[in-house]
Length: 225
Image (cartoon, rainbow, N blue to C red; front, side):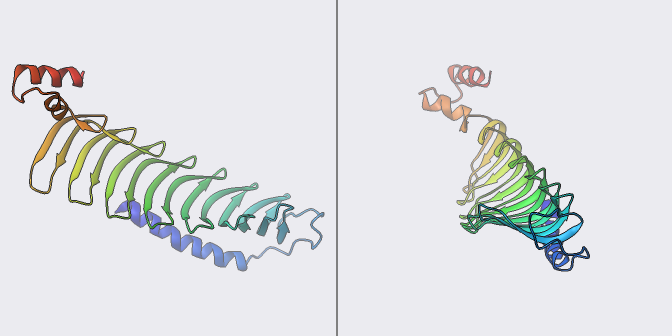
């Protein structure tokens, strides 16, 4: 809930930023784009079709500004020395949208990314990737809450499946890996060790070994090693 509240506050901040953009106290920049833009508010159109409307400092986008890219995407928010830096919103032409923190022109910090199909990630980012604590909600209602690394589930986390199943435990490279518990809608529960998204005792059973036998136990221990 803490992450969700933080990211919702970004919506308010960005909305305020858009208003502040229209009410900039800086003087207008020169109408001639070949002249130096410094401590002023103005519009600059790039040769590739991109367009920036906002604040400038020392010839660079700096402060509040709106940049429209040639493919139709748009960024509204804060800039620092020609880079997206601070609070901002980027909207893609296909409807995807990111609202949150930026650093050195990349998504960094807390933010919400809503995909064009309605799926949503709310949490931490590092250099354009999901990294840290977060919540990813899929279109079918599936959700997991936990740690991410390089845009994949890594570390401790919980995943709730659409059919009511739930896994709580360790993850590695987006797969159940390590100690965990899988709970099924009928009350059945698997508690123990998972490897590459499979329950270790189940792997040994599928090999034809009888659960409870010494061979089965040795198989489990070997896989855990």
